[in-house]
Length: 198
Image 1: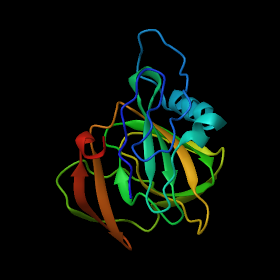
Image 2 (image 1 turned 60 degrees about the vertical axis):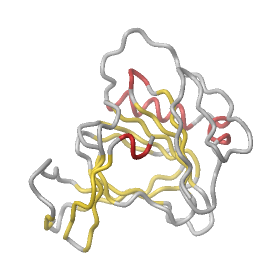
Image 3 (image 1 turned 90 degrees about the vertical axis):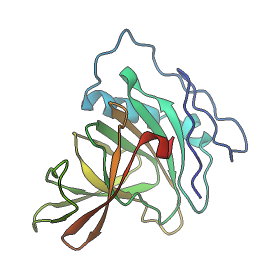
């Protein structure tokens, strides 16, 4: 079961419909008229947010599906607090023209990514070269930033522990392409737009 995200005001996350209580407020420093946040600034934001124990503890967790709450990110960015039940993942996807960052706040996540930029349009199936796969474990406190068109999947491989992470994207995600993968074959399955997840 996935809990629908809710848009957030300037400094507070909004509880998802299934939460037992309202989450604690989370303060984001006010900023002057913003320029585009850099990958480093997004990574700093998700690290600071992931260290907010009260905010992390406020996320309602579901035993079967991911849960999420939208947060106010720096400089007009889109940010999310996401709960990952054991054995869940995103599937392969990209973030279109957005740069981003994420940090594991609790538990451990694993990221599989491609070290190659995919064509933006004009294809449905690609055969990947042998040397493009990358994997990394991200225990609590660890994370990464990434550039435009980053393709990855993120997993909670634990059999018994939830993971929680904080993500930020700029510009806010215009779309996400979802892929299936069988060995070296990557197939475009669908394109999601913000109305599909907000």
